[in-house]
Image (cartoon, rainbow, N blue to C red; front, side, top):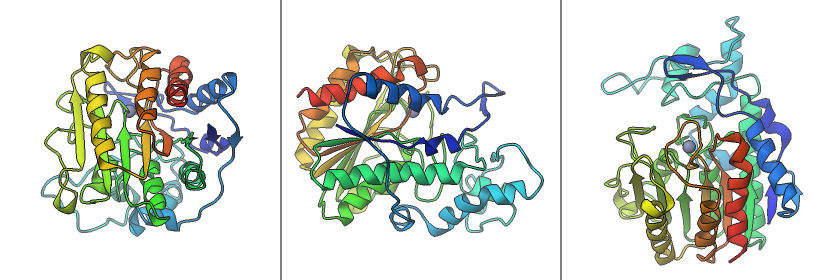
Length: 344
Ligand SMILES: [Zn+2]
């Protein structure tokens, strides 16, 4: 299996996020990719290729023009005020506050285009998120050219980013950008399977009314887990997309045999019934028992089983890297999914 990778992800390295009331070093850090790439090489998963440049138009197929403008210029506006630390949002337009006006001040824009404070913007963020999207797009292109599967080693991740807001370490929705690119290239139906511990709210939002994209997400119950405000089982899609969004919220401490395997099997059955031309997997491995910010209890070998289940779908499959913060094990767990897939 081809892995698509670029060192440009290092251009983004947020210094701090708010955890337990304290600004702490971000769990989302460049070494995550180092560990996965080392494992890809250790098991000789396959060739490693650099991404090609796809320009802005595939991004604009998913994200709003004003949001993209904001992302591109946020750091220069922030730093023009003499601010040297990462840009972080601090006020949000909830409920009856005005959402029809984009503020002019960068502090206002940061809140207007985000859902939380877990999205530091640095001098290199825009270049890194563009590169991450190009990694996913290069993977999609290879899939279209006939590869059975490709691993897009994306960083920053993407599944919390919606059409016009960022959140949860995510800025551009790499998986959604790849889906749209595949469909523009002729795919009639694409399924997104999100196995990250956290609900893929951005992907759900982007395809919520789309009759050609099925989205299935297995994640921590939002009653007790980030992102708290989406991911319930009764979110089933809307209008022409009704019935094509499937959420599997599971309680904390869920293990393979206590609910995870059953949810995955059900999601795979729904994907198979949808008969997609391709499957895009939002591959988060923060479901691991020792993940520092999550609460499921999957063990190393369970990731082989996840890959096997996806392999049995027998569809062209793009794996897009999302979360996973137990850095010592992230490589083994992510690559176990890919090896499980290839063993089928
Ligand atoms: Zn996650």
